Structure formats: structure tokens, C-alpha cells
Amino acid sequence: MILDSLENLSRYDFITPEIIDFVRSLNVNTPCGHYVLSDKVYANIDDYVTRSELECTLEAHRKYIDIQLLIYGTERIDHINIDGLKVQEGYDYVKDILFYKKPKFELNRVYLNGTNFAVFFPEDAHAPQITTMCLQDNVRKVVIKIAVEWQV
Image (tube, rainbow, N blue to C red; front, side):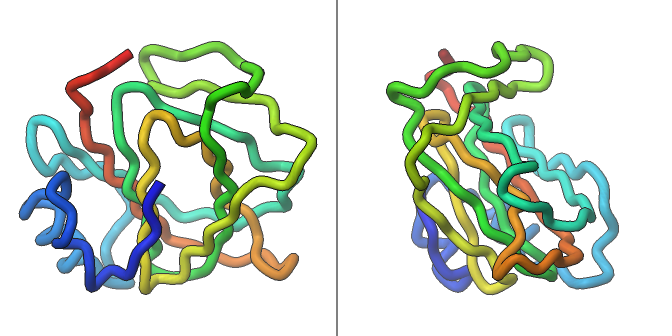
């Protein structure tokens, strides 16, 4: 898992020029939708209202790395390595998603606020869309999906 400032996006080898150009083009008027950036990279932009921690599920992906960032709003994402987690809902090959039961202890937390980004690898279970400071927020989120060669 990586958390960094958007200004450092180009420091990571797996973040291609197409991704950097796409992120630089984003603004509050960028419409929600599905964007194909290359044969191995796509992005989804969605609007939603953040939710309580209890409503958010712990998920992971096998075929894609997630780069998550906000165009506007704030949200918390809890995360943990998948080792030792118990499966709640089996892997969906079409949607590339697997859900885990949350452990009884507190998870790691990151906060997105429009100036930073988070990267979640296949070994990183994450629960996105959580409210910050117990306050719901309207969010426009970008999730960039990068295909991984070493799929499980």
C-alpha cells in the first residue's frame, strides 16, 4: 500500500505517462464514467456519499492494482494485508473482487482529500468510502485499475 501526494505521482515506475496525463486532466467538471487509458489500464469515476465504518466492507482484487484519488470530498480508507483474513464472500472473477471479514482489531487508516492518492496492491485488503470525523461527505472518486501480470 502506498499513500503519497499527487505531485509525486510520476515517481513510481508502474504509473505510466497515460495515467499521469489523465490525472492531470481531472477537474471538478470531469464527468463520472469509465475511461480506457490503455490495453492494461482503465479508470472509473463515481460520485457517492461516504458511509459509516460499519457499512463499509473489506475488499481486495487479484487482477488489478488500484490507484484511488478524489476530485473532491474527503474519505477514510481502512486497510490491512490479506494474510490471515477470513473470506466473507468468495472471489468474483468477472468483477475482480473478494470480500473479507473485518478482524476484531483496528485496521490501518489513510485519508484521501483531493491532494493525495493511495495505491492498493492485490495483497492489500481495503475498506473505502468511510466518513471522516463522523461526517458524511459528497465525493467524486477516481479509481485507476492497472492490470498485473502476476495474477493469482
